[in-house]
Image 1 (spheres, rainbow, N blue to C red):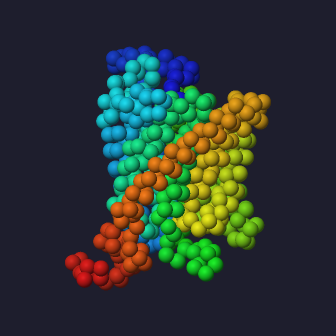
Image 2: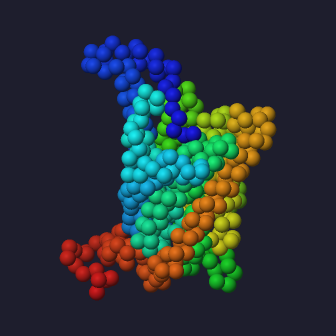
Image 3: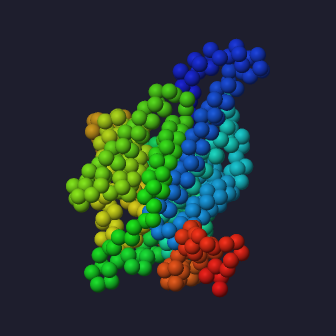
Amino acid sequence: MKRTLKIGGVTAALMLLAAPAYAQDGMSVDDLVVATTVLYLMLATVLVFIMHAGFAMLEAGLTRGKNVANIIGKNLMTISVGMLAYYAIGWGLMYGTQTAGLFGTDGFFLTTAPYDVTETGYTLEIDFAFQAMFAATAATIVSGAVAERMKFGAYVVVAAVMTAIIYPVVGAWTWGGGWVDGLGFQDFAGSTIVHMTGGVAALVAAAILGPRIGKFDPRTGKARAIPGHSIPFVALGTLLLFFGWFGFNGGSVLELDAQAIGAVIVTTALAGGAGGTAAALFVRVRTGTWDVAMIANGILAGLVGITAGADAVTSSMAVVVGALAGLLVVVSVISIDRIRIDDPVGAISVHGTCGILGTLWVGLAATDGGLFYGGGVDLLVAQVLGILGVAAWVALATGALFLTLKAMGQLRVSEQEEVEGLDVHEHGLPGYPELAYGSGSSPGRSMPHQD
């Protein structure tokens, strides 16, 4: 389970060496160990938090300028409402006392009993903060797939339900010690638990919501390119996500073990690099161009692909899965278009498709129990069953949520609002006012949409 932590031997030795100095200030060696571990988890929490800035920039860059404020607003609300929903309900469902291996029944509003830090090595509060970042990450994946045509209020509801119920139930089954964990399923930092959960939700959401106006040719049904408005934003978002991923995976070691943390950082970096390289070369051979947006998605695909097994595979196998993910994301984006599902940022392919790949890769390439290393098929079977169980729950829950919003008439903006842009109609002002109204617009001047 993810929340198991032991203090590494190297760290313990360092704490003993530092003991005399800290003893003078009344701090015991045990106190120092806990404080250091909390500091490590705080750093990891901050790194995962910055990933939300990455998502915001990536999604904004891959969509049109008339919707940039809407994209930014959704990401701001995801982290805001997501923290509150996970605090009120999600944490308890995920890590409370289990009922039949399905979900927790206590610990709501963080009423869980304080941890015995001599056993865990860290505090309840830092554990909650770190886990809450993961919950918000699963929710924000949906944002990009429904960009440019979903009502803002409806998305806020979706973000709340994702962080309060849908993701926490998945977490209860796995990291919380539920029935999927009992199968022997392994997902180190969330290729399935976080990324595939978000990817499946994004797939169902985009299918029910329908494509953007003009995305598909009404005569041939072929997808039309709708370019995003800022490649620099795409690059910035990708690099922020890569940066944050070192906390996403490195923090998931959950122990002050220098060798383990170093190994995870290396496999993470190599997979991300391999993903970007493979996607770039594949698209170059296929189209004759170096597609910057696809390079970005290739990097993220490689990172998603290694997340399940960052602690379990060799560096060489990290390169292989990263490269496979980089190739797969290109094929998946093309395939999603062919079945007439509109995903403006490729979230379904990056997080859903490559999340499945990464989880299966553990069953194949884990040095302990993987098929390639003589472990037989038991781990691979557990991975497949875990994927199927999680995908079924997320698809059913997300489908029910989106169909309910649709039946209430609260899901999609009007055709006029979509054509003119969500920034003006949903938020009262364009993301780029001077571009929309001219640099001569002055304070107090009536805007066109206000007439």
